[in-house]
Amino acid sequence: MIAQSRYEKVTDNLVALLTEIVGAKNVLTGDERENYARDETAKLKPVLPEVVIKPKDTGSVAKILKLANERNIPVTPRGGGTGLSGGAVPIYGGIVLSLERMNRILEIDKDNFVATVEPGVTLSDLYQAVEEHGLYYPLYPGEMSATIGGNVATNAGGMRAVKYGVTRHFVLGLEAVLPTGETIQTGGKFVKCSTGYDLTQLITGSEGTLAVITKIMLKLIAPPGRREILFIPFHELHDAIGSVPDILKERILPVGIEFMEKDIINMVEQYTGKEIPLHEHEAFLMIIVEADSEDEIYRISSRIG
Image (cartoon, rainbow, N blue to C red; front, side):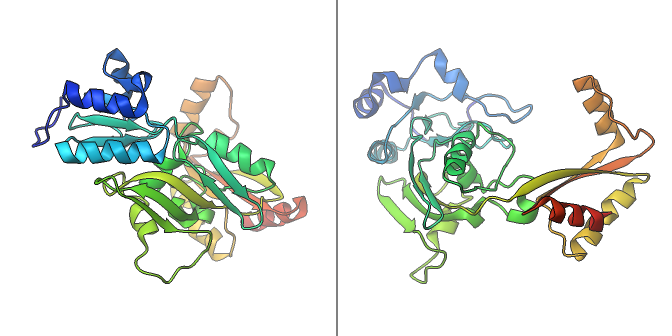
């Protein structure tokens, strides 16, 4: 069901103009639109967009937004559709602007530790590209098929946020198109800029409400030497929860910490068909640690206990 609004409807004339911009095969008005009516949010009813547009470059995005703005047509930007909060669902109908074709990795700058990418690049492709250059993008929100544009628009985090923070901590600059069709550049290949407002951080996490992101500069780091996962059982649930502040007070900074109750472990066993030991325990912590060597991993593990 489309929400009540004061927006106008998409007309055949507008579809014809959009087709001139991106080509007929990148304008969807038939049953294919159903694939763009939902994301991965549980129990959220799908909403069919009036039209799906798949631009290939910033210039096309600018023309589309300018047309939509002039005609008061709602636009919902869409990345990989992996979100869990309904952000890619076009509740007002109108246009779904799918950025899936804008999927180029434009540059991996090894000297400045910066990747410049388009918003439709998946995390899987990003990880592979930076690793081939001996670098590392440490964030992992949980879906390899998620796009970096969606990550930036939602300021995605994930379990590695314990050590590395969230997406905004790795966004150095953006190219974005405003609703009027104007294109702006923010930030750059530097950590600090004292000129004007920090528009990069304003747009990051704005979920498509301020602008459509068309290019992203990401900070990269050197890869860790080793990574290990520690699976620690606890007899009491509150002991597992209470141990986390104690670990952090010891100046141990894990990459991630996941808390699991016994019921969750039982579900995992049922789903995988594999038995997990230590059934007498009520709770578990899964702690991911990184270090430069195996000896350092062992020292960290010993301190965690």
